[in-house]
Image 1: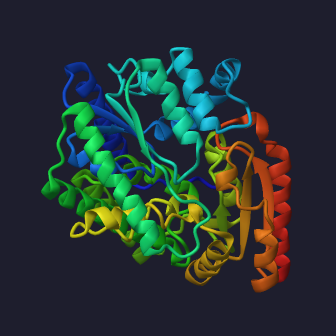
Image 2: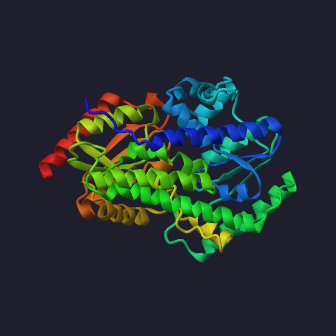
Image 3: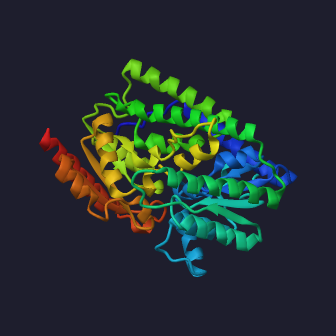
Amino acid sequence: MAEIRKLKAAKLMKKVMADHFYEIDAAVKAGNPKVAWCTSVGPAELLRAMGFVVYFPENHAAILGASRTATDYIPAANAIGYSPEICSYLTADVGAYLKGFTPLAKIYEGIDSIPKPDVLVYNTNQCRDVKDWFEWYARRWNVPCLGIESYVNVGAVTDTHVAGISGQFKKLAEDLTAITGNKLDMDKLAETVWLSRKCSDLWRDVLEMATRKPSPLTFFDGTIHMGPAVVMRGTQVAVDYYETLLKELQEWVDEGVAAVEGEKYRIYWEGMPIWGKLRENAQLFLRLKTAVVASTYCNSWIFSALDGDDPWDSMARAYTELFIVRDDDYKEDYFLKMKKLFDYDGIIFHDAKTCPNNSNCRYGLPQRLQGKAGIPFVTIDGDLNDLRCYSEEQAITKIEAFIEQLGERK
């Protein structure tokens, strides 16, 4: 069986992520600086500029999924009234807390628990579930929960959209100051937004390395190396990491190193990863000589609108231009643009049972793409964290048949 190639940068990433969690743990134990929880596509730049260390529960939930412990804890959240059909990040994370478990304690010596926040800050640009998730902890710990209420089903992002969200950002800064005493330094905000923009640009460059043939990385590599872009954007550490990763990938391209030896097909992955099956799926596509070269999920942390010279409006625009909150006309155009860029042969739509907001196969979009541009597709049923929703045998059969069909088209 072909082996998954490992980038040397992965070792550095492990250290960077460890430093991140130890920094938060030290802040909790010392009582300074204050700790903010933030949704993964939330206003991290504002929180960093106001002096918080920032923790991202979605990252924690993904670790629960990748370590295959999520399914053990989801029933505990179901038992207190949270449906098994809502976000399995939420139910896994809350369930693990109720059971007194965190994988951080197993991975990082000396860390005993997830960090108690001084404030929780969400952005509903992903879904309502993140707000419900944070509000549960806010009630549990009697700490303030604040947030941005975003637009959904957006076509063109207009100045009206930007003004609405920008105003909420400014109000959020005022409310945070009133609650915690942390004041906003506008120079620090500009610097943080610029660092986020650099991180974002480098992350885009990393992902677009997969436009090369053969591709030096796949979607499964991206789900691992996206960690710093998610939890450390707005810091020099994240910028330095992606400069290192990009350099190594360029060396692979120059040497003709392929992530998938003998690459024959190129696929777009639409939807969430199946965290508990990352390795198995990566090996499946290796066997099928198929490189999964692009995904909506990894692209979700590209924020090209960020501008340190115009922090409020640029943050508002960046966090409203997300794929997940756009209408289907925008999404159709997006997939066609990605087709030109990555030259993929077909799309795998992952219909994640508990994540309708990241499942774009339910309203005829795949069929419209096939009708307009002849793009082949297959849909697999599964979930991001709840492996009880995933039939591995059925998914493998579907994917194998799909790749065989692609072969007949060539």
